[in-house]
Image 1 (cartoon, rainbow, N blue to C red):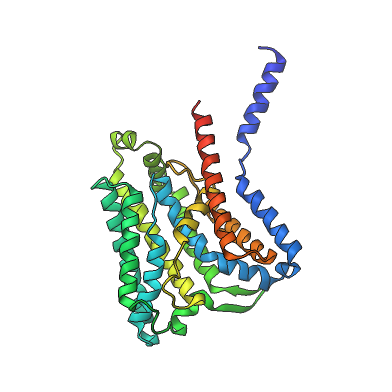
Image 2 (cartoon, rainbow, N blue to C red):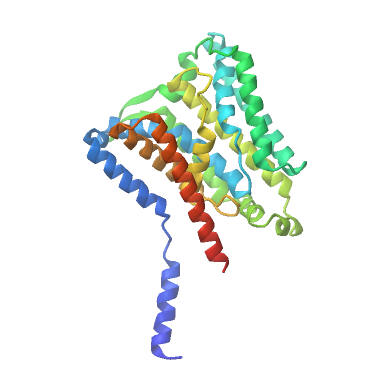
Length: 330
């Protein structure tokens, strides 16, 4: 082998050893720079901490959604789960702050049940996840409307709203620290560890990449998928608690969050056919989507434009992911 060929092979190996950086991080940095240009106040602790506070529910939701996407499915019921969490909490609390903790525990139990039903219907009854979770979305939305009588009633006491609304003051360096960011760090940190540092994360990727081969290899496909749906539902309950904290009680508080979570995960590089995805990249996708919406608000564009932009982003990201998948298969 010639010296030139040896050198090229060594250079190729060194390039492969370099860590690949997800392009979404570059997009996020560019958007943050644009936000600073439009609003210099954004560089102040209050500015960027409020931005992260607004992004926290979506970042939590996207981190849970990526489990379902990597396993080869969708979860369209998370938006209705958020709404049911907020409406149900306000009805059960009945203006009683002392009931906060058992109500939160009950909401997580409801989320666990929703995830189990979704996972079992998809895995055992072989119903496509798109249809199964769409049915669950309609069901939960109907339950929330019937429970509330079609209009929000009651209020969420400060003990419940603490997680989404409260800021810890006089924190060194950053001055303020929203409690929602602590929730985000703990919850998404656990999801990151489970996805990227445990055997379960490898099983999720294997099931999403080729469920038939995974089953023949002895992987408990049903259990893996059910756990993925449960994690997604629990993330929706957590996001609902945060949204109830700073948005209050509303019958449409979770509207559209299911598509935003999917968009954030796809922006982070998750493949809709399964087998590929990252918790950290999905969080970056959520921050990117929030930055885009914030920038549109700074520019002064109306709400319908935001929905158009989200749709274009989702279509473009999916088309790019499918193109990249076909190219890699050659």
